[in-house]
Image 1 (cartoon, helix red, strand yellow):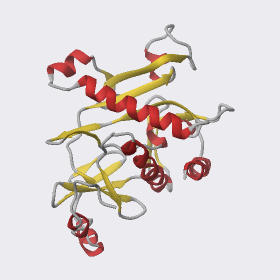
Image 2: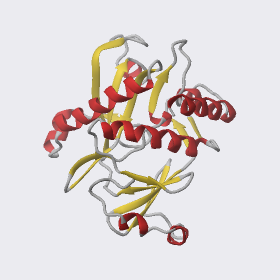
Image 3: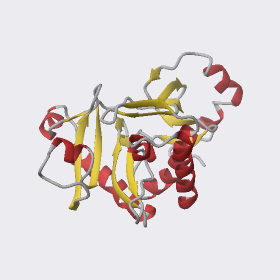
Image 4: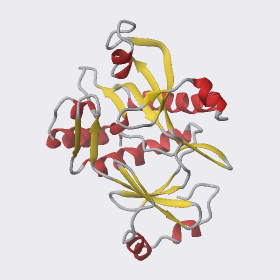
Length: 249
């Protein structure tokens, strides 16, 4: 179904033949985990790449079958966050690896919500919080996106750039609330978002998937990219993510 602000013919422009022709050309934007082709009408085709990467654990691999599972998950949860009043760039799925989206340039930073101390929090701030410490309220932070590892950026720098920090925090917290509620009894430890801006305001332009969150079961089992970080093989990752999708569908 089209979003309310879109006309039906927005969806008809990209026929299967037109998509096939588009994919013959180099992408306009290419990253580690996505490729993007701009199309008419301020939209783009986004293709997920089965690439998983962990700077901390020095792993960077292609894991077949994970891209379509990420998109399966995203296609489900995008309805949740939009129902919570959060605008996203997602328009519709095109095939197993690709979706049509509203094109917005990516900000050079990401927004991270942490409900539980882990990962970079315990590594970069040793002695402040132990692994698994549950925060009394969600912590929202911003990381500057740079290789080889994203770096924390102070909010005053963002204010200087004209970023509406409070609005971005509100978007992130709305997503956190609905994801935590709908994913329960799995425990959402953290997740990250990339938020873009156009004439209509801010929207979430990144995928929401197990590749960009930490999600734990009541038994402490990981259902996210921690599987990859800690050495799981592709078969184990695919099996866990397929089970995760079945749980939320």
